[in-house]
Image 1: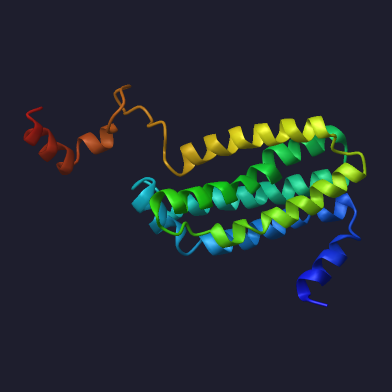
Image 2: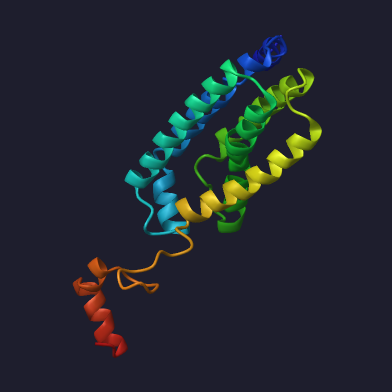
Amino acid sequence: MSAIALVFEYAGTLRFRESIWLFPIVTAIHFLEEAPRFTVWAQKYASPKFTYRHWKKVHVLGFLYALVFSAIVSAYPNRFAIFLFFALCFFESGCNLIFHAGASVYFRSYSPGLITAFLYVPALWITTNRAYREGLLLPEAMAASVFLAVVVHSLDVARNVFFWPPRAGGNGREGPSAKHQDSGVFKRTSKISGRA
């Protein structure tokens, strides 16, 4: 028997409250793949504002969020908590596969995190299957949670990877902040463009 078959055989014995822990495990593995190279990729293809410090902050908070939400839902598995878990955590993180695959194709450059984003597929299948079989996730709630997850993930990527929409500058208008307006680079470009 292959290792993959053994994993699926074991996964078949899990109850929902146990299978939920696949989420932080897969998330940790996914973050480990992203960590060394995603910042460079994001600076080149998404936004030069993207830094490793930003990546670390977002992902440390994200991992803590995954652990806490998993613990709460594992301890108190009710339909409302499970709906929120799938919409705001698991399905939302599963959208990473769509983001990494789409970004890799669109930019014609491997988006670090693509390989491990595929791990969300079996983890989601196992956990969703358990929730459905135990009557904790109804089809209507699953559809609504997928829709909400896509919206939340799209907004998350737009804001935290592409830094869109741009934040207003220090003067209340779109553009460079007051800190950047005083820099030599801004002054040189202002003189070149004819602005004072």
